[in-house]
Image (tube, rainbow, N blue to C red):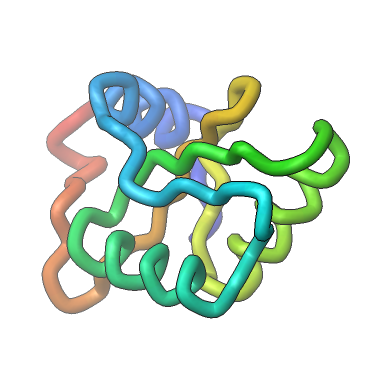
Length: 100
């Protein structure tokens, strides 16, 4: 889903109070992490991820791979924390129209 800057701003505001639900440690991106991310995105649409692996470039590659494999959108990243969004087409939880 292509998000406008306005939508990203709204999602960052919503994501500020979230706790990380997926933590990627030194072993990198494994199938179990991808499965856990998919489940969390299905349940919540907007999730926070903690990356405790490698340097900045390695974290960037991990996030690019994760967003590609989960069809999620990277809303933002600060340091070791990233915010991902994927619309749940059956039961959407976040309504952008109401948050204008």
